[in-house]
Image: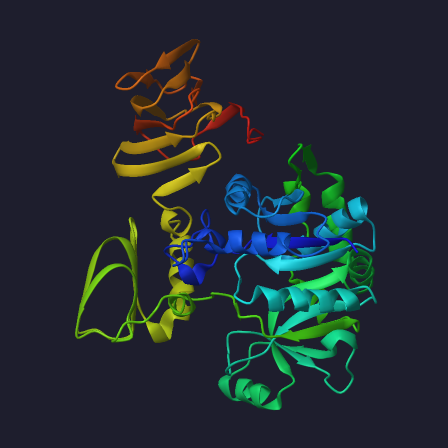
Length: 480
């Protein structure tokens, strides 16, 4: 039976701000072991038996970064496909699009294994066994969920009630109902009952069953997603297949989760209760659990000195942090933002992100170092009418042929070699050489060498926003 893991990589992870941001969300965060969640998820998916390809549903701005992470994952070689969203539209649209694409290329009997890119699973053998059990029931026409054995009365998760009195084969049970996030007393009653499980948001089903149930219970979702796919852009390469969704039609797709749209309505839902060492790493409290505690129950990442301090979590890999006489704090430092919160309020970090978003503050969206398909740029300093960046271009990579209406740029090569188009002129610049790009000039920066190109860019003008850019040619498909 063909199995297509579908990695859903669309969340922002706002509770893990300031490290997780829109342009660098939770799946890409470095964990204490030096790895990240999206690489772990990809390796785990690629290693399963019968995998025909790994599909990823993500924002189009994260495509190239995702590709790079998969290359670093050192997983088993497997075909890849991508569904690229212009913006988030919740999980029903993503799952429906994945099922339609899988049916088209692999047939209605092919099975989808829907996984979140930002979940941690420690027991991969138990996970593989649970997937095998789910596949048996998926082949029988069930929509199978993975129910996590609860360890404590968690109020931050939804629950699945399993009908343990009517077992199916291979340790699966019909689902009686889905339950919203409960209060503490109800969560404790679910734990005591023994037949309630945390809803992990992972699923397994055949493409045909999923589409049949969507037609029955959510026809507006399947109809609108079908229209999107019919008018979307397909890019095929020897390494992967990419579908870039039509933005105008995608805006008309209902913004609803797969749970609400289908799972809570269908009578064909089953669950595999499993104990796989699962965590959604949904807060800094959960993240702190990945680090070892010292004698005072402090958990730290980076250089930290403490005196009469206990129960704290510190993440500051770039400079020394000193704690004196404080208890139960979360302290997360990045080059452009510092978070200080009480551990009991770790879930409330999302409200800071909402405030920053309402203020149109870049700190909810970007880090000081921003990743692009061609490399990175880091904002070193900025003020009225000027901005200074450090730009790193990967070997063989090229920025788009572009112009800016409101700013001029001065480029100084620090290391490597640059091929530059400046209006009608093309030139090569070596270390310590420079050029000036006036506003309105078409220009392009390329690294023709085999080592990274590093340069300093000094911008000046009356508007220095990143949206002051007109692209004419781009090897990464970013022109309109």
